[in-house]
Length: 417
Ligand code: RNT
Ligand code: ZN
Image (cartoon, rainbow, N blue to C red):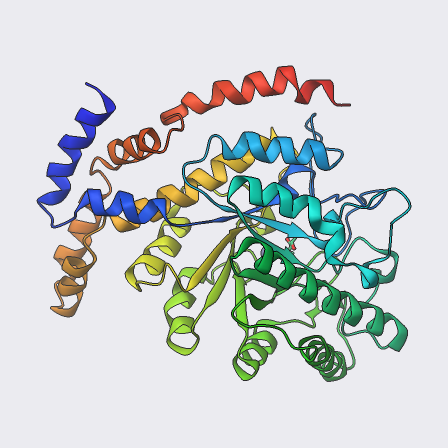
């Protein structure tokens, strides 16, 4: 049987439960996911020694890591060629590309340091998202936006302002809104004596950054909380309560990273609550194992649940989906492709679920039937729809994409040392 014939058979099966697979394929094609540039080089960036700090860690030493902009862009291209649809690239400020002699510190970054990325995105019809980089820097070995040292705090405030300008530039150039997400590693290894003052300083710093004014139609500013990090186990300044309140008061976005909560707390459950109070919400989809380990996103239960909530809340245009992980122990291009395709698979899986029927069962307190039906749905011919989606979007189906990775590894990646 051909992929199309399998799809046609699956279409009938889904039709019987009231799901229109043709409509689903159209909807899925239009979902742009933000692919994080930093999986390609273990969050090293282009500034210098690439030493990662800030309580996050990329572990592993798989050969082929991108060492410069050309290599990173080539690797991104290779990954995108294996992922259906048109997406977005998520950049960090430490991926600025300087002409020789033009190097500046992070507080002095300008749009011109990112023109190569804009050209890259334009040529491929991609959107760009952005992040100020508050780690891997000599001035970030203690607190940043919450620092008690006014000159350090000022430096990072200026970095935030510079990044806001760059985000605006991305949006204008590409004619697509840009998400600028702020995450800082600030916190304390052990029980602090004062939890309020650092947070008051962070609040003031954010106020100052936002005070420069920006076009809210062009830039969505988000703040990303975290429960703890390596070396800041006792207290993080940018906690969930802090940012949820800050975002609500200032009409900006919360970004929920599903590696940033207590291990039994799930982001899927937070999505509908957040959507009742804010117009938009941003996500960093990752996979924590026991801690915020940033493993490659797999097609696991929580990913499916996150996707279901986005789809059921009819919020595909309100939830900005980005990936955030960095595994240095495997082929990095493959890591991107697996994570991106899994995010899309999870959305597809959610779209193929008869939400109204299931909700009716819940509302009718038919919990027995609801459980039975949800379990049976897991064995519906979802893979046949996925393979056809790949065929329609001219990318290899099933595991067929991996031979391209193998070739790329032997022809290109293995030659990098
Ligand atoms: C760290 C945060 C943050 C970073 C990226 C590189 O715990 O998740 O989003 O992973 O900015
Ligand atoms: Zn994150």
